[in-house]
Length: 255
Image (cartoon, rainbow, N blue to C red; front, side, top):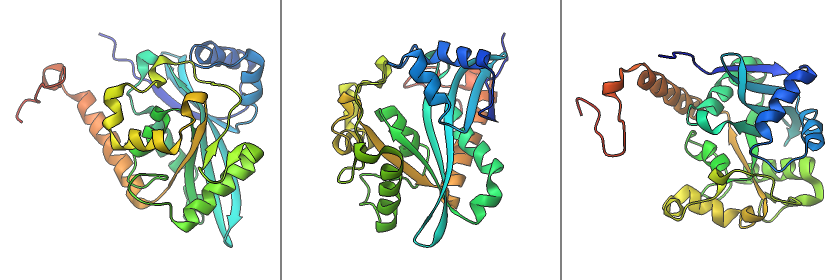
């Protein structure tokens, strides 16, 4: 039995060309990018979170750490982008683990700044990373964006996307559909989920590759929900196979 676990490591963007080629070998399977455009994007992120299994890269997330002063207060922004995880290794909470690791890395600055995780969600799955992992995130069907949150979203949109940012919708125009992953299409049965339904309404151009700027404050409630989720995953992974729910409708022993 193979007991190897996926390792999560966060590194600065100073890795070798060989590592970039290994990243490209994974990325090219899920996105409509040329090798040159991919390599150019790699240079735009100052950190990366690598997901490795037995020393082999099976996924990664590009991270861009930036800072700004808004309403006379310091803000720390942590961008998640260029994310890819090989289909065989999804569902392991690798993005939430990345978020927890970042908190430990930047905790001093986090204490003195308003900190936000954010992403340009090109697919409903990217949006659900926020909606299903965190207590507080924006935009959401549950409420209208507070004034300061809208100001932050507009700052991010204008700063990073310029004329391609839509102030009315909080969306980002793309020249083409960049995601080449069948899992990004939304099955009809999933559209009943309120978060997915909201994503479709808030980002009507998602079928044309448009992104929705999504963010979450690094608050105590968000951190605690993230920590609980990771603990539950760890407990479930440690249980013997006969205690796990093998298929939909199977009850856990003792319930």
